[in-house]
Each structure stands twice: as C-alpha cells, then as structure tokens.
Length: 296
Image (cartoon, rainbow, N blue to C red; front, top):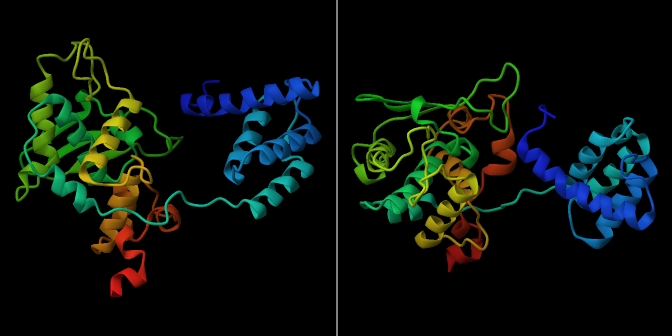
C-alpha cells in the first residue's frame, strides 16, 4: 500500500463504496471482479450518472487493484473503455480563464492581519509560480532560503503528484519585485514568517498555519478555501473557477506575455517534453471568448 498515495486511496474509496453496493444488489463477490461484472458495473454507473471517460477509467484502476487477475487489461474491458471514450470523451475543465491582473489589483495593498495575509500569500505563490496548491501546501520553513539579490529559493522535499524515481523535486525560485512591494512574494513571505513566529508551535515546520489556537498546520483544504475566498473577493466568478484555475490563469498569462514555453514548463513543474500546458492549461481570457462582444 506504500506505493499508493493518500490522495489515490481517497479517490478509490468512492469507487469501492459504489462497487460494494452494486455487488450487494447483484449478489457478487466484491473481492473477485471479473471482466463481465466490471463492464456491467461500468454500464450501471453510466446509466445512473453523466460521468466521463476519466471517471470510468478511475473505476477500472481501483477494481484492478483488488482483483486476483489482470482484469483491467482484459480485451472485453479495454473494448468497453474505448467505447466510453468515444461516447463521453475526456474534456478540459476550463475552456476559458480569468485575468490574473484582476486579482493582483485586489491584492496590491497592505495586509497586516495574519488571516488575511495568509490568503494573500497563498494566492501570490500560486500566481507567481503556476504550481499546484499541493506544492505550496508542502512548503517547509527549513527549506526556505532568502537572498538579498535573488529573492527566495524553496525546496519541496515531500512527495508531490508527479514525484517518482529519477524525477526532480520542485525548486521554487522567486525574485524580489521592487517596483510592486505589495505584490512581492519575498516581502510578503518575510512578513508572514515574522507575524506567525510568536504563535507558531515549536515543532511545526510547515509554513502555513491556521490563525487561531492551537495554530496547527493549515490543511490543503483550508488553503483551498483561502484561495477561493480571495478569488471571490477580487471579483472572479467562483461558481465557474475553482482554486486550481490559478494554474490556468498564471501560465496562460505568461504565454500571452511572450514567456517561452520552456520557462513556463520549468516554473509550473512540467517536463520539457510535456504537452499538458498546450492541451489543458493554455486558455483565452473570459472576456476575449466572444467575438461579437469585442466588436459591438
């Protein structure tokens, strides 16, 4: 089980719960999925919901993990999944993105209260790096190093989504932003560390902590709420755009500004041969999506 991340286990638990109910109804052994029972289960799920290929493929992976044989690779299952891909193809979550300058304009002021500064700093980290929230959540105090000339360098030593053998861990490097001190990640990070120093538990090495007793480490879900609150307060439509959309907004804005694809990949943690940015993240601005709107 050590080969499976906590996030994967959490994702698979939904599949197992639904599979267990299906087996109970059909009087099947949940610990012995067969190709035919898996296909019947997939069809049942599709008939009762509007989920796409990606979700069905996740169900396949979950059931393959507990199966006694390689049923996930069975020709019947593979053929069914090909049909699902044609009927309900995977699609990017967003076809448009928001303008990060809307949020930056909102954040371009002093924040002195720890709770508000926490929200600001997390959001600035996401927009300045293009990284996932998971990566920012894993920043440790002991891995932060400041430089008067180069700003701040942060090593991420804990496993992330794309960690693996012979793969480099993220190294976040952010220069100072002298012309915009209120938006400078380095300045706001130093301020956050100073403000939280008196209340930070002695053994707490992770950067972000909650601003009320017992001042424990902030969970990733808490950081997500902070970002969502900031986006909403800045005027971003959070009924459409969620915290992960900062990755789309930041990298798309960098591309529009002429930043090379290699630098975008390096900053956001994609490999040099990855086409993920082109396929799923490079999106036009929401206000540019309508040609008619732009000419009337």
